[in-house]
Image 1 (spheres, protein in one colour):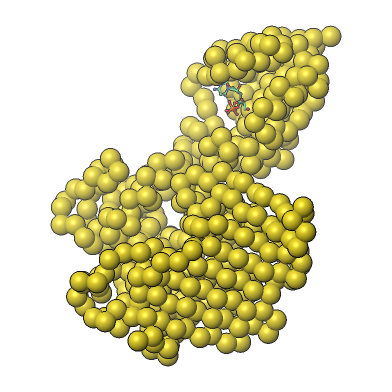
Image 2 (tube, helix red, strand yellow):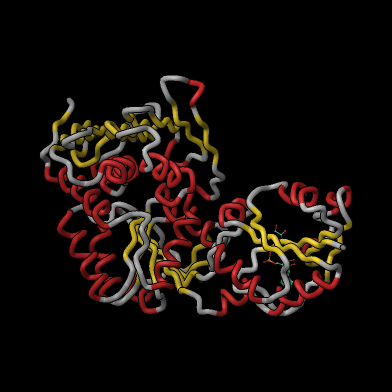
Length: 447
Ligand code: C2G
């Protein structure tokens, strides 16, 4: 009996896939199809896959061509499978010519002619592109624009740049027409807002009122009541409002939350997060500083994210201590936020004018999580116990600091018409509450 194996994602299974499976089957007597797991696809840069693993397996099964279906979960698995299943022929489409020659050591390798004119990517993009407008200051937009090129399903419709007077601006090699906010809304289905936080509320409101979906760089608003109003407005108009906090979308961070929530360190007693990035603001005057993001806006939301996501938002007490710039009392160089819950505590230390070790530590009754600096864009963390032999290290590939997953999640929310769960509303509202408290002046000041 000749055993054949082939692999693929088989997203939105089409004629090209079917023809490949038919010819693969015809190469022998028994066909095994390896369908890629979601994590494996992410790892190899395929972030636009639409269907779940189970749906993709079901579609392969429905062709009636596979005698056996397996899941491809890790790099190098093909060698394992060929030996384990005693495979005679490995086959794959001609888009992979040469790439799998190393398997010749284990079995015969056959590249089958790829079917022209059909692909999952084309099917996905035909569905209708989301026209995405970009709003804000160029330095804040660079990474977002670059990362948007990795995500299918959106086309940039233009920009409204607060720091440029030019009609056209080339950012990250992408030419964008720089137009007014109103014109941009007219030609977009959705907008990404990364303007100065003092403008967020007005701009988000305008966009939602025009029936546009919004991804807004955190914080969404500087007052809790404003943030509440914006979410209500998004519900009323049936559009998505999502807080842009890249960390929430990164794989390592989201897996860390799952591990902690499933009790791996016992009960969580303390969350301590530090985020700093030292800049030179010494010579700056009040006016200049008011155009920059202060520490509480630039870092506050990121530092608060794991606190609210792990300990919840029913805190009993908050205290903020800040060190402000001598020229501008709303530009904090450093802030320390202490939050008390009935059964736990948290501290968030953030600074643009103070440097510290930017780590995240989650302390539990049985162990703790240690995420090294800079924890908000980590691909690595450890779970540590009293007995170091039980310690565990975790690695997850991080592409584009999480921004590309954030964009993919935003587009998915638009497509399915439902907010997604990465950052829940109560977390966004509580972040706004902290900004509210900071700006209310009810904080302690260091001299
Ligand atoms: N294919 C084809 N014609 C098309 C599209 C795809 O013959 N028009 C083939 C591919 O060459 C591949 C199979 O169908 O052999 C599955 O394609 P994908 O789902 O795109 O999977 P791919 O990323 O090619 O995965 O480990 C994964 C495998 O190496 C291949």
